[in-house]
Image 1 (cartoon, rainbow over the protein chains, first blue to last red):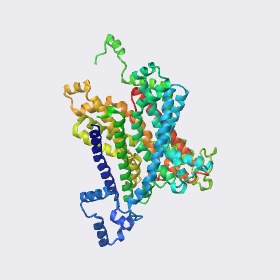
Image 2 (tube, one colour; image 1 turned 135 degrees about the vertical axis):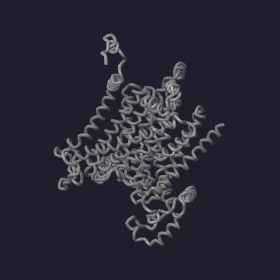
Image 3 (tube, rainbow over the protein chains, first blue to last red; image 1 turned 30 degrees about the horizontal axis):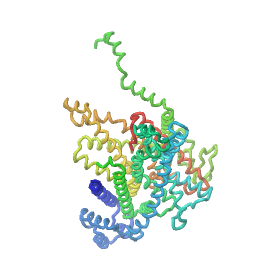
Length: 315
Length: 300
């Protein structure tokens, strides 16, 4: 029974994945330049000097003379196999660039998410336990400041404080150069926002569960307040929190783009921005596609986890 | 026209409060909360700063004075000067104009289109709903900033395209909220009553259902205003948003990034204003949410 439900959810994500791919394809065709000219390493100004025969040859080679639908299917077929074409500017395979950058970004997302979850849930519990008292106000104040701080600016503040004024961490650079130390400031910079959201969600979710009858029953059984909170309330309150954590991916990725750029971390975000600066449409396409697919997959995983944790969700 | 009989006149005075009176009473109740008063005050102050920028700014925002470049904050230049000797305070004020106007236009555009799509989707239901919601889900799969960056890089970083790139995700967000609200409203008795008296579907949706769903939509608009301003400044920070010499907080922070270690004021002051704007709209959104729907959870 459960496996059919999960299978259905997996099948449901196929149209979304296809849609993301279509969107990435359309993005490439929105670009005002002629891809054949770009592939020849020329920009728009160079267009008038191009030999028309040569241009036609490149068009044919890239399949640009085919109808749009054929081009789309051809591109999709290759993209599914992880082939996003050859970068116009650096002439290396886009897939190589993308998959080289992916581990850094995934690691960054992982460290950020864990930090945000630990800090956020702790703050949220603190807030709920001390509801209406000083601890609650301080925790909520931290949460609202966290939600409101612009990620890229916070990254600069952290850099100024902990890499320049107090040179504890490296200012910029990859893991290859500085080891995991390179991840600390970027992680903190991106984690602030989701941590604050998780704290708020944990607080309101715990307060809601606290009003349930089962809490009164547990207290009446003579359980300690601590046990009621940590075992009975928290367990029931965590479901919406997990959803929020799962859906934070888009926010995190958004933050990661600017933060990777600021700290010169060679991840997907830096790759995307380089692609944009160099007007390399295939890199932009590849990065958008991989980010979209990763997001759709993470949603899928969250939904499945949710079904496994909470039997009530198995629709 | 005959005069109103006196008996009826006194009776009229005892009628329940009209819409305006109810509205101002609700405002008073809203502002009685200190946090709401604070966020409303901050919002009004920011709007005033943006509106009055030409009056308040001590220097023209693009007045270059290389001899006075990179000066620390002083009485002459409240927030110091940037590398070209331009007054940071004046640029921050004009930056508020840029940010708020882009934010407001984007949210309004997203609201109109998104609410329309969401309302149709929710009211018509069946396969139309299914298709629209699939498309919405696809757009939600790509992080807003990535989508906006990619679109602006392809279309070019001019204000109309920036608004368009920022709106796409807002449209999907408004569509989801409007759809959910319409779905729950359309089974209410008053909708059945509207149908029974023979109203057209369009009239029912736009004159009766949507005004009843205004709460969550207003809350979302407030929260998204802060959100859009943040994304616009991130775009500008990455060089894909508002272009020089038009002042934008994001561009100013990016420029300051190059001088971060010896002239931190260039990027810190615009950042503080961005932070205050975010605080104002987030708190305002929170307050409105609690006020309009005390039970409600998060809408975003």
